Image (cartoon, rainbow, N blue to C red; front, top):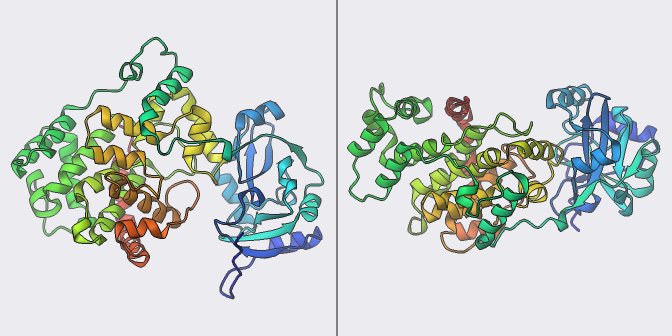
Length: 467
């Protein structure tokens, strides 16, 4: 177990928490948050509510909070308190995170009984990056008026399929049959009602693989789709690209600003993204779909350039992998509409877990599996389906490994800056070595992209509008 000693520059627990724990006669030690601290001893605090009122729920980070079990236990259909209300409560006490201290919220409290098996527990201090280590007996005293229950699913028992892509069609079929009424068809392509690829996307795919394709060809395709043409022109005119002079046409946008490679991959990403509509429901804390896509693509663009020239993968394809990395999310909403809301509610109450665990627990498959499967069905480049399928495996070193490795690195770098959802995860040295990028260089790329964050957000907002 690793505990990181605090240096003098590290912030201390907020005074309201220190005073409250002193009043409760609870001794504590300040410890810097670190991924290697045991998940079974780290207390996740979530404030839920329904029409009856609020309920503070405490459970170890080694478990997934199962809202269905909670409903069986309490007889209440609880969900995460809306973020603005939680923020208001935290702001009142000048806190940045919700500590697992029942006396703070004055709401009834329910805790997972297994918590008391740990000798020491780590609770949020209310200050980012800082935990409080308390002894079990002291923690028990804090729970004097709380009720115990069993409602968590051990994360170790949830086994996402991270490395057996050959099993994807079978697992997706089982999930579709279990969660939808479409049980009679035998072929997966018939079972899932996937909208056909738009004409524009089909034409762009043909151009992508045509070695003789010219700027005139891509201009012609983009101009036949008025919405896409407007998008490409406004993209080129964005201050993010700092183009010289006014952009007057699609050809102008391609020749003077964006270039053939970027436009063809951007146009394809947008055409595919628009094939499925953005879900109306989403987890409260989620970064909007297109914002997440564009940030990730921009980071990957910079990371690809930072790789040794001889080892660089195709830049346009890595950019496309960034744009489409979360495409499976749209597909889950499309294929499992009644269950998608349940996924969203579970993501809200399990911020300590990657979405893969929530989806595996509820559906038996992940967005990565179904997204990669669709890319193959649509005859997209193998590099792209590999990027989607293995993006959460930092150790992946199979064929086309640079593509999922770049997505993995980009999303983890963004998480470290509070963009995207799910827990912060370490970036292994081996991942950086495989890509030939130093840690400092990777951070430099993120800094540069995020300097233009307002401009990127503006680009993304053009796409986030419902369509």
